Image 1 (cartoon, rainbow, N blue to C red):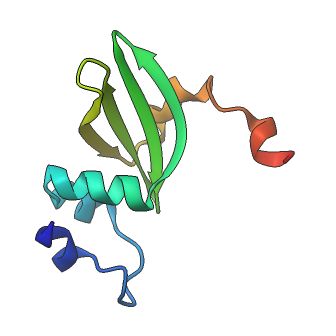
Image 2: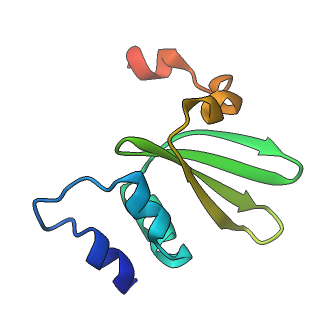
Length: 99
């Protein structure tokens, strides 16, 4: 938990975390940042695992929710837009624009 405070502090003028900063965090800090500040965008299920796509500033985070453990067991960050393709079928643009 202390690691992410050194890299990024929401109470300072530094209000955007970079992809590189996120990658340096330990698993607990990645979980805390993802759940507290990232915006859930889409979900998908593959082979007994649920994947949750989050957006945090200029990059994306994929959380692997393992149904057997009833918990997110891994966080993976990426900037490559091609990696969001598996989620595109799940995004309903009407929900984004017509509410």
